[in-house]
Image (cartoon, rainbow over all chains, first blue to last red; front, side):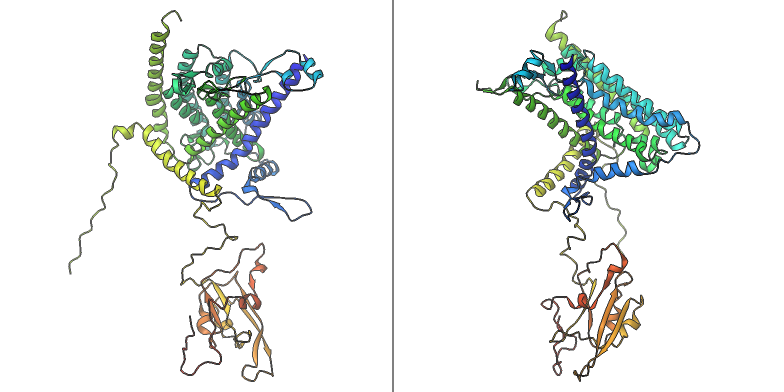
Length: 384
Length: 192
């Protein structure tokens, strides 16, 4: 159908635009936040000069990301002498593509009714009474798809490490593989509790179930139902993304750059970009699972229902816009939190890293699962 | 006099972690709240238009807190009519270990007391080592060093030459020239 094509095309453009913008902006946010956290000023030298004038747009160094991108694109694509050509070329893409694909199943807004968005009767008639969930791929296997794709990135880093015929790359790849497999397990186990509570792996359904209110005042967000799972999930997700304190695979002081030591120019840029986009993806996943996605407390598809019984009606366009902005706002705050963690904690030693995963987080995740199972059984009974 | 025996400083931290610390989570939250607090404090300063950083935005921002005994920049002292006190004797240029001072002398027959004066007096700050020998060598107290730093950064090393006009462009309010003509038995070191 033409209408579906238009809407989904718009969704895909929106998703790619958001992710690329996040990837670009986060490089700047990371530097600037690190600087402000440590009483410095931070990146502020790159500027755009308006042609034929002497007006320089500095904008607090916002264009440093642009300068980075230009540098990556224009650098020589140096390749080592002895390497596996196919695997070497494939590596960055296998890391990069799944990260983008994860966003396909994440709902970034409620239900879109295109006919209600416009005043023009022709467009409204053309769309008819179609409704669309604001999500690119409306799948009932949402969470499983997320794990499937995020599990793929480990293959990319292994390919990159092995194909470049370098001992540092090799070590980085091995570390990356064992670390990601360990923490993938923890991540899956923590989410199991949520799946038990919500009874589904469909991310849209999960978000819709979080729109209510708990005990009369708390928003029914996953973080209040599963606080332990939220902490464990965030930790495991950071480890999945190989950032400090879990950046063993690419520890600068030990392994130069880990599995992408032998990469240069935009291939190396793809690895970095994938890392920054994955920050946004992790934030989006956490928002979806634990922070109610696009939901604001007391907000429904028609408007706000305040506790005193007041009702503030909103037009459909305003609701859609609010939901998208709320989602992006939550994602941005969580990105900032991840950067805070990255600039606060020191790096693990490698044995500590694996011990932390298997002897600390895995038992906690299991305990959390057991408690959840018992609680769900006690509340709903065996028949549920 | 007997020396006190060296006492090892007692470290405040216990060598072994308590179970509370071994649980990591609360200690991590404590650490994050410290760094996050610093972030929020600095950010609050930035958004309210104050400066939330300890570092200076060099070179646009000149630090105000150079020590009083810092010697970072040369000045040429002036006579009351604004001409340099320098008599172009070349002693500073001779003593300069970095050989960064260049002087061209001019002759002025009108001024019987000081017929010689520099027509060109340049210091290459790319080579200057800030040793202060020029100040000590000067017989006329014509060159001094002040606590500020010159506006050095440039895209080219030829931008780092300081010309006579730059050296004369200091503020007399802060660094008063030797009174002229000198008072008999007056303050030989000049006023500071």
